[in-house]
Amino acid sequence: MVDMDRHSARGGRVEDEMARGNTHVHSSDGKRQSDPPLLRLEDICIKFGFVEALKSVSLDINRQEVVAIVGDNGAGKSTLVKIIAGFLQPGFGHIYLNGEEVTIPSIRAADRMGIASVFQGQEFCDNLNVAANLFLGKEVNIGGVRNDEEMNSRARSVLKTLSSAIRVGSPISALSTGQRQTVAIARTLLNDPQLILLDEPTAALSVMQTAEVLSYIKRLRSEGRTVVMVCHDLPDVFAVADRIVVIRQGRISGVHRTVETSYEEIIAEIAGVVTEHEYEEITESPKYGNMVRERKLIDRTMSAALDRNAKGYWAGNE
Image (cartoon, rainbow, N blue to C red; front, side, top):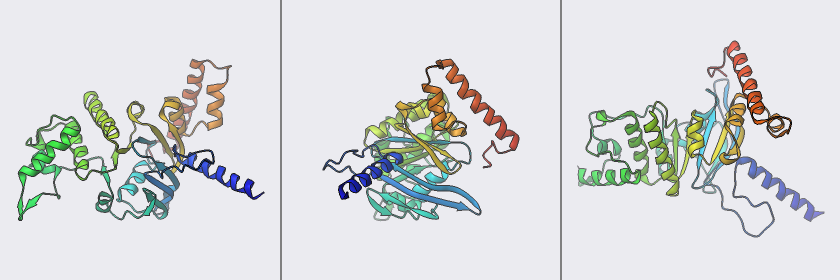
């Protein structure tokens, strides 16, 4: 009886781990133990006044993967990333980094832990060049004198890591939006972070600039880093993400392997119009052809969108 209880407890733990998105958990009772995820969030909650922005969010982020966080406006995506970045403090919950519980009281503290972030509207000093902006607030000094040669050398090195042709002496004011985003990403690499957080990295970029930024994200993963990105653009998400986390009304409504899901499933889950059971019924039933399945999902999603618009909260006022 004791053995059965232990086995049941083991099975429950494995199911819980898989629900978090931890793909490295063993489902059998082998002796080999899986490594802890790079980052683990447990029951993260935060309120702004009477509004619950995040409600018991639990998620595992593994090493050397790209995780995309998607959801409607006001769902809680950026709030979650800001908590990981140290910009916001959760009201309740636990954060584990490399298996050890930590608190992240500030962006500077996160930086020391190896967590770097790039938020929308990253500010630069237009009167300074690329190298000076990369090291802004982190200038290299020797004997109290700024060492421009060392900073230029390191700036070239991090830009080379991204295969970027931007010159370190170019004024920031002369760069395009896409090039500025490249500099922002390069700035995160100065302290050799293990986890990089990107908030809407491809927003307001041209097609060519978007492709360039996506290639940088892939390169970061190939170098062994982990990237968590908030993104509204599903083609960009499917192009680079290993897993997709859907947040709806402050809760995680699904964690999907990108290769095992579809645009229709993610859109339906974001809109909250198709349950997992309903989605499986529509997509797996032999009585529905591919076009009929797609039509049913689109019709359901659009009906919900129109209904929400009529109630006045389609624009993220949830």
